[in-house]
Image (cartoon, rainbow, N blue to C red; front, top):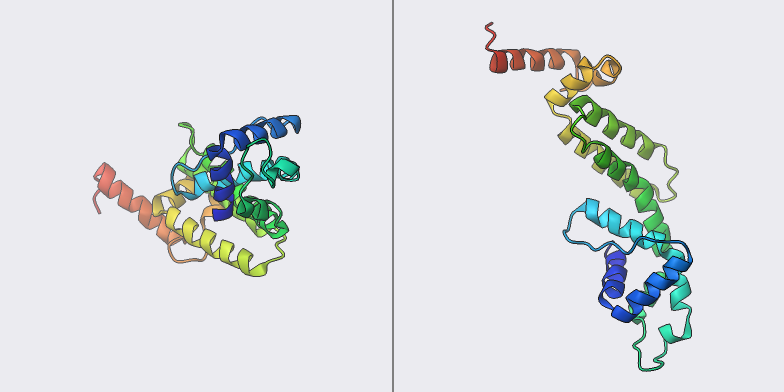
Length: 205
């Protein structure tokens, strides 16, 4: 991800080469620009890397030009480390894989930002994204295993008792809410419902 950020920093920081990339990208019918990373959060980093991936062809076309590597007409060249990154096939393979893993969750965040979205909808969206992750055919099994572990931990953190109860109470999703895992059993859901009844509605024993 640092390499993708380095590409963006160079072209967004260079008036000349940033303009050349924009012209080259437009010729390839790419209308969006390279995303700036305003904060070190994975959501913005993913959008940044996705914008780099969309510019893959334009970047390769641009650095193949003679003036990209040799000073001509007084203009500076593209930094050699940027050229090396763009020409590195393993970098693009990694970006493609990272996008395949992350994009379902980026889409989920976008879907869950609406005011009409319920807690049950949020849970279902994240479960669907996790399902897409499990269906990926990853060549690097270590990276895939790590991604699955991270997602499992994050979902367990997000799946609060109230979220699970909301999923259970939805007529279409209820069967997804009950599993034989501590914190997600039917007994746990009953306990959560009773807690809400006591604390929010003042029900007695």
